[in-house]
Length: 232
Image (cartoon, rainbow, N blue to C red; front, side, top):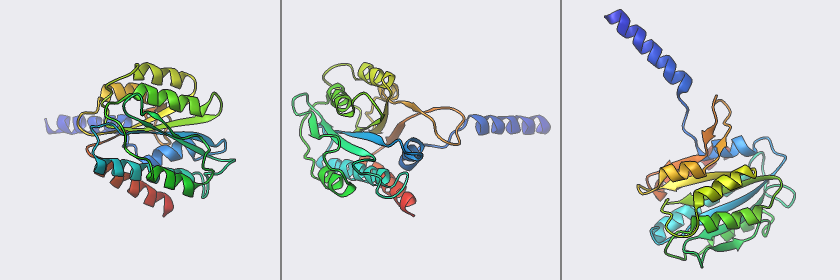
């Protein structure tokens, strides 16, 4: 019996070694996508500012986005946000009417002004029109090149068109969608369908570009740690 149990444990261990995947981190995702640039990327941040997100959590969300921006600026090397390199835009989504492009792709050519602009984004809205947020990002990114939508949301889509169908249509056009889902109410089945499958070095299968956190504070802690790893 002991011998059989030992064999079973070894087999189970082998299964987990083959099938198990290390969890994704923000820096791992950005490196997988942009580490071999050029070609450089067009990036649209999509920030959920709906009523279910508190003012404090909104600040955490913006700070986390600024960390991601800094990681992008250092991938594949320093000062990678520039007129001829990575270009940045931002959409704030909530209720349908206040959902809008806050700054268009390439408005700010360098990291510093993009960083300031993200920090200055005001929280507006009550409901959550994820569909319109995705549509505006799609319009910003255009039809050519390496394109990324980086969505941060608490996952409560409440108004507007079908966000999953929009995301799937965008993916078919070559746009990568990564979703940062925060909180216990995040609709993970929906979010996993919205997110793209991406290649991660060291993994033998594609992974959904999804990051999931219990709180916005935990999100910010993880993005800051990721930034420190990139800069170290």
